[in-house]
Image 1: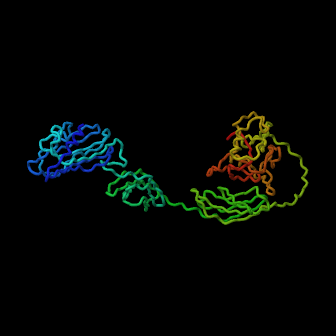
Image 2: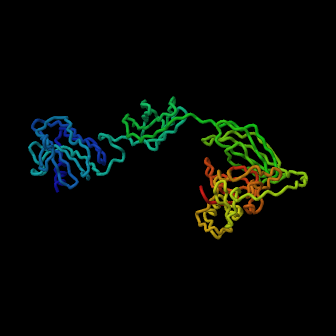
Image 3: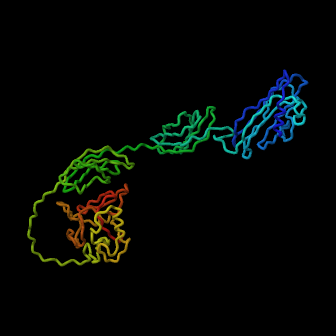
Length: 509
């Protein structure tokens, strides 16, 4: 009801020949928590004569509908009691600061501000509409309890922090980049280093290459956006980078050699400075290219087809995985090596020496499906071919699950007692003086007495002159594990997904 009365009383005619103008400064439609609202009232008054003086009334309507009136008292600028703001005015062009404060939580709602000139000494709430007045000055805004859509610092809206800052190290340099900010005119980059240096610089792009840095020193970066007025926005999160010298790939291997044998090729090369491993590539005539990572400078390729040509080449690989350019290539063709029939020489007639005592034997057959290696104390499964070909993980499980009643065992062992030999245990097991250098078909093991090459049942059975898995994974590439060729005693690596023979043992680890 008060609002309606106020509007009706304001709608009156102005005195002819006089100037009665009141103007509020503009307001935004909405102000959020943390923003500052500032409202001014400009007077432009020239009365027709000194007998036509006026009073200035100003009020604000709250979200509840109630009115607060501006008072002439600085200690109480607003009052719910209807009263004038300035009195007995004849001529003025004064500007008044109505409001200047920061929006706080709990003030939400719409506010409307009014101002009008009233005939001197009149009260529009008691004297009705027979009063003189100016135009009605009116402005409205809404206060919100929500935070502003853009950041506010000291009541001034500023640009948000640039998003997704990234510091990418290079040699003696760092490339710093970030996401663009809408309405940004430029950006300020801040950097500091772990050695105490630091500075800031202005750029217009969203990336900057910081050069002339010290390799190994940590550099920390952040960035702010500047608007067209030069006001600085919120600072981004910090990111860090450490420049480092570029690592060059190793040179290509040289001094290649490929020696063909029966169903195998031995490929060798000279060690390369800076190489941590080598990738060997090969291709049979008309076949696909295959590869394998090795740590040494010798690659023995077994299981080949005699009469088929194989071409080999390789790359050196450093500790960071960088590869050299390819080496030259070398081609070899495995062939069956023809050997003349052996010359039969009748053995001299000598008395047979007495059988050595069991304690002097290399191996002791325990009669329960196990054989003890007297040199190491390890107990091996007598049957060296109980599981056939298996991949590495399956071979480990087969060994772990082995127990009494399987593979000819009657030793009372239980699951979990058996395992694959380590690489070192294989090296101690093989006896390279029994290599069959003509056919490579004789396992490099001694007999039970340790006086000659292994024969079936003495003391093991089913031993194959082929690769057997170890339990030792390859240290620099966990996709590989070590294995041993029992035809020549060569120890190498193979992919765990490939298959080799399985020969479990138990005892000390």
